[in-house]
Image 1 (cartoon, rainbow, N blue to C red):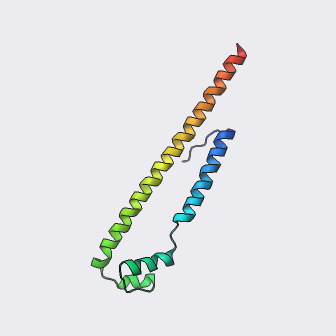
Image 2: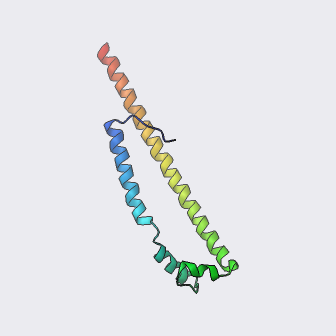
Length: 111
């Protein structure tokens, strides 16, 4: 379940900026199936013209290709996870700092 943070102006700006950045990043790394098929065909010299043709390729040919794709995907997912953890910790530290400053200001004004 997603955690709901109390949003101050700084937190909202940070979240909005991160969302926009991730959307822009996704647009640059999104996989176009037709282009990826052409890439597989060219790089691995596969005799295919559609994804359906992949069913005709021998398993011994496809397994090493699939292993490389899975390995690269795993590394990408790990990187995305690290970025997500970093963003969450940054957001938490900003929220904590804002709360601490607000508490200090309240203590000063009541004294």
